[in-house]
Amino acid sequence: MLPARSGIALKEWAVTVTALERGDQILLLRKGGIREDGRHFRIDHEGFFLYPTFYHEAAALLKPESRPLFDSAMREEDDGVVTLRLWAEVAGVIEITEAHSVEALDPFHIFTGDFASKRAHWKPRHPLNVLLLRCYKLQQPQALPVMPEYSGCKSWVDLIEEYPIGVASPVLTDREFGRKAAQIQEALSAATRTA
Image 1 (spheres, rainbow, N blue to C red):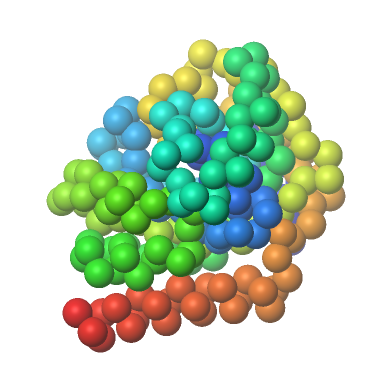
Image 2 (cartoon, rainbow, N blue to C red):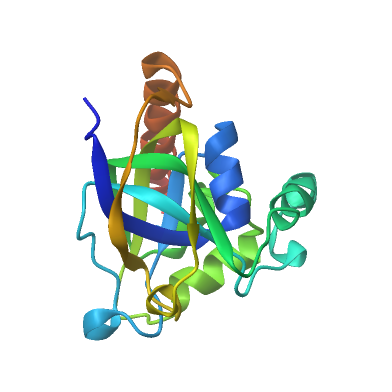
């Protein structure tokens, strides 16, 4: 059961939030922002709003078939307001350090293989966190003002107040989500066996 309200959000590129909202992917690849506490990403919360950002986004970082998502996401950009449309719950976390594991994830995300590899190799002493997210679409999205406290290259945002989650529908059925999660696990296992 989802909580009634929350004041926690995870910042993620708007195009990725759109892909999660459509069910095109169920994972995030995270190393963390430059201004993270401790200088690396930590999973501080099991459930959170997804806070769409536009900073550093570029269509060239997406696979060609995913580039229309970029245009769709960019139409929502507004410097003064951010709209929370998704609630996410962490269904699993996989830490990977090997290039073959990053390559095995290629069918399961919207990014180019080159971008995924660069993300994995940034801060090479820290593993790449693969978050499997169960996402829920809010029936009543929450539009909130962009505050100076929300800016900067950091992952977690403590919102200035708690916002209602209200009625929310799973983006994927239990069966669909379970199938996608199993495919990711199998791809990673196969890559390890053949490495």
